[in-house]
Amino acid sequence: MSTDPKFDDLHKQLFDEGIKMRRAVVGDVFVDRSLAGGSTAFSRPGQELVTEWCWGHVWTRPGLERKQRSLLNIGMLMALNRAPELAAHIRGARNNGLTELEIREAILHCTIYCGVPAGVEAMKTAEKVLDELAEKGEMPRELGNKVV
Image (cartoon, rainbow, N blue to C red; front, side, top):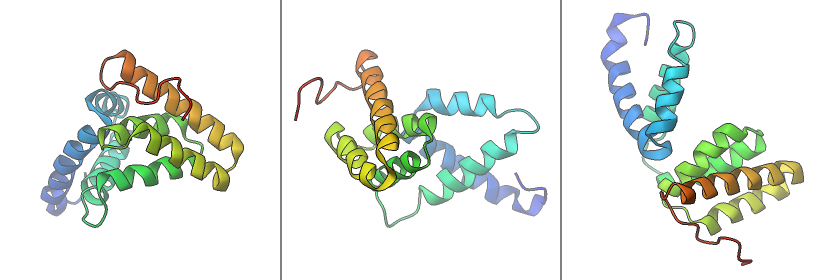
């Protein structure tokens, strides 16, 4: 939150909207783990910033659907080689309605622009997340081991 009390209501509103969106996209487990890991006096402001501005301001804006935002995140996180965040956003992409085929094609498309090593790592990350979702009974595999 801000150090200026006059912004407290704004921060609370953004945080509340952000936490709802964040949970809807990446799930309660990921959010709870992130908040718990960022709950020290030093790191808590970072989690508040992410929740308020990323999730409460940008993700709630009009103009792009959540599905489109997920596609963008797959490409950006792949380009930045941020596998843990990519994994969370692969889960989010499925929660936002992207199919396995759309996720795979986004990764293949980005591989050309981001490089083969980034593409290989992203494909491994996505496959692991998709397998975990299926194993937990959250979402079945659409493509499985078949070649499409």
